[in-house]
Image (cartoon, rainbow over all chains, first blue to last red; front, side, top):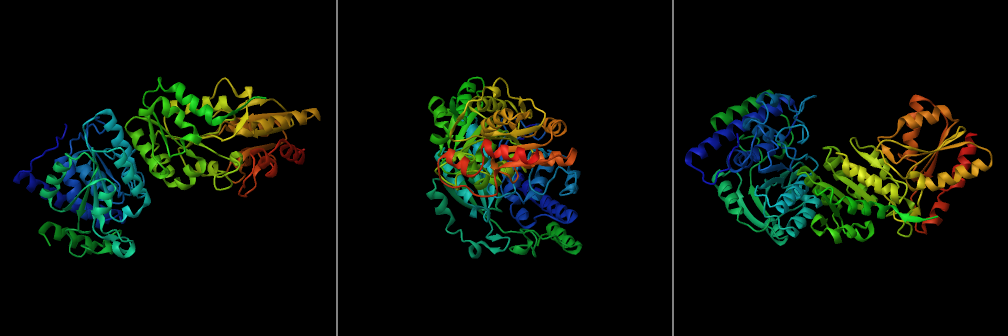
Length: 282
Length: 308
């Protein structure tokens, strides 16, 4: 069955999406705990973005992942597979039971997205910058064919320190990729600390504007704002960059804004505490 | 003897295939004048994408196009595709088995005047180590055409290695090109010379000179480096007294090591390698550099005689 993207967000939709986010965050904790490996912080931080895309904005077809008219999504910050895999499983791309095989030998759920193996994964990413350039080639092909579907990509803010991102920024502008809606997950934290200490990115919006992109800045946890911004972005005649301000580790008190939780594995106690907080609220 | 560019064979094949393969597209990183892809661009402007001086972005854009069903040929110089954009070649193309043809020119020492920065003598070693890669190294203009067409017709990543200079046209290479199959150019029972790419003319010359001295020399041309023709290599190991390899590439990780590895594991025999001896090149005329770095018929003959 085709899942049709929607424009309006009813109060019931909003409630459903919030509940889904809660479920996905629990799945993230469980996956990383079970695998003893994986990236929790950035996954929790981009949950609203990815859930809102797959469960409200995008038109797609989980039983037929190669359906030509589907909207495409690429996770260029490929380390955040826990959130992507949870969302894809919940949509029905593969059984939810597969999530317990994350990062295990023989699993189709690799540590970083691997397109040939996992239904619903559109591009192989993990080395930062690669997903971003890859989706440009996809979007350009569709634009030249006159196809109407959209291309969505999420980059990490640390990721955009890669020179390849700025190569792509020029390329998207040259070809006026108006079917491309990109996000940067702006949480100011990367593996070794605060982005502004490690390699400053601010002021970020003017950088993208000067590269010819239409730029929005939103609260990346506000589902209403995500929806209204994407709907507005579809009217752009240029590639769109949505700077989504987020909290790394969102939803778990001791993981929020703590760069140590970029790639750390929770103990049994931490995992239980996190799941409890997610159930009851911080 | 007639001399023609292998890069011209590549672009002529693209132009010949364009109607038959409407999904084929060509990308370049602002060296289209040198790779000759601008000749394709002139005829098919809507199917040509000049990515600017962005090799890393270009290879991944090509991968994205392939995911949408295009057959992209991405061209730049060998050194930039494999070293500067090595990560994109590995993680963006080889690992996901993207149907991208990375067709590179200016490989080997015969780049000439530009010097070591542009002379790619490591690219076979790098691409050989990537799983899923098919590596084609044609020996002349006509074989470059055949290899380009074979690359377009197979599904999966291909590294197509081409030169800059004009090289002898070798009629023995013509007719057909089967990926993974070598060509037995001359039979022989004393020593086998295994060659790849444009060194084929030196291999043939070495055989001629050795024949005059009464030696029976087999010459095998490897138009495909990966998957390599193990059958032909082992046949040579069993039926002749040893193997001499010649390649316009470093002896580290290239044809010579590929041959030596197969022989050592299955049927040990003497293997001697002619190529760049773990050294960077320098500026000069192509022919001067082949002399200077020892990639000539006489160097092959020296190695043959060491075995005999």
